[in-house]
Length: 229
Image (tube, rainbow, N blue to C red):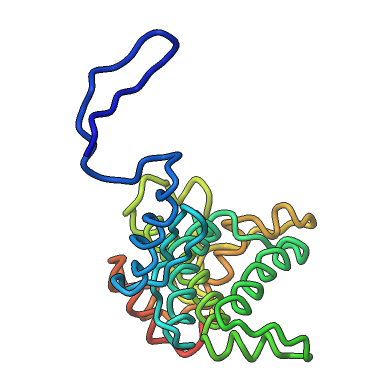
């Protein structure tokens, strides 16, 4: 063990004893380093890449198809999906081009999760069926929209229903007694706006569902329906 210091031009640091490492520039330095580093992969639980004086460990992941698929699905559901669905009850698109863009992300994620890039017709539909994604996506969007309207109807949020919607003034055999008038418009801008689309779905629900005045109970009632109109 030698005392070493750092020299810069005419200035030097205080000498200290170096009791570890290999002296750079020595003849035996490379050999001593190899003797020290070569058995490192035998002492760690992960795979290690060795090159010259670099050592890069690689994390260990279970090499099972099921666990990898499950990990990818968890990543999609926790990172990508929340961004796509943020406030989707308000801006949920109606134009085919916009819907196709969102569905393209979903289909691409399904192939990534299952590592199945087969181009056969209907393959991605079968993949999403296996993951049970397509059904969940559609029903969740409807549930989110209808839950928001339920909160508006019963005053659970700070949005006055009478400003945007009008209840039917007379009984109708086509709708329940809590149905709203459907706005009529010749333009898609109004026809497919938030309240216009939502009123149609709300009016189609059974009366025992729309009469539930709490958010949790309403969501539970929607879950019992085999199909949301």
